[in-house]
Length: 404
Ligand SMILES: Cc1ncc(COP(=O)(O)O)c(C=O)c1O
Image 1 (cartoon, rainbow, N blue to C red):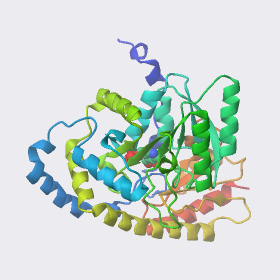
Image 2 (cartoon, rainbow, N blue to C red):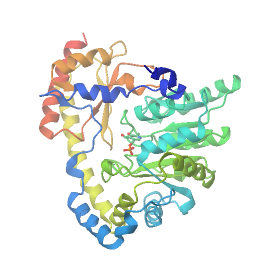
Image 3 (tube, helix red, strand yellow):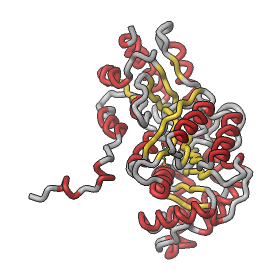
Image 4 (cartoon, helix red, strand yellow):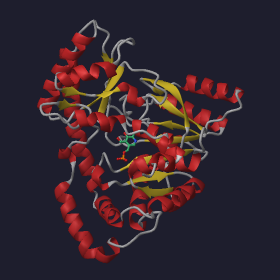
């Protein structure tokens, strides 16, 4: 018998199955109301528009659309994205500043691939996106966590963390942040913090990775400039995706950054998959060209705003009072973050929630260094309105019994 274990690389041995995927299996039990997934609402998908565009792609571009494409991406889509970034972010890009990716998760993998040797340091927020933890772990990066609050990453702690590392002769390669409608925390980084972050990165010569899949899904308040648009020194790699504004099944996104970095992205991507689906890129290019993105985003915002308000209203109504339960009130995106008093462990409460037929994602999944366990993530984009009301009632009961 061959011993497979002897064959596996150190990298794959250091990788674990996603906690979320394992938990999602439990949440598929009959009768469960799941706030655990991170799925967009299927009502937001532009199905009929895509049907027409798909036919048009076959008619106009048939053979080309079925062929391999360049690793950089389809020129037609690149030029649509240059227009989109000009309109939405007020930045002027050239094709050399963009790499089409298989959505943001590939962007995160490529960031890990081009920057991290085993043990290299990168700074992540605490909590942070579980998929980023997996991506950076797969290159055996050393993630140093910096707390966030309602205004995003705490820049004073970020600075003192970098100074402490400096005294140990260590320097992070990059700082990874999710500034808009954070997954999982639901908070948005203030303009002040964004400026301070850019200042620190510039002073210390550290790259910033800005991951912003929810940026266009704002349903309250004013837009805050992206970190990318605040940076004047080519310090930012920004990851964008069509997953939450179009359809995640397309697996399409784009990374923006300095030419030198995008060059390395392309080299790394070439070794991974040669190119992103040409067919999907044609569809996305036509979708943008016809101005359909705006319409789809508007429809999505309307759906999520209603669901967000319904969830907040019901949390207010049913959550036990005087037990120290708090939750964030996001101005956009798909998630909010519920916190119990520090000594309570949301991992331990999970089993009780499943017994009462309601599910969430345990907070520990979102900490690179297992810092905390008292919070958990709740999604409101996917469940129906009836499920939101009934699910919050069940959750409130679980918490009431668990928090003494
Ligand atoms: C912060 C963040 N980054 C990246 C991703 C990956 O998304 P995708 O690969 O679908 O673009 C997600 C998905 O939920 C996310 O929340």
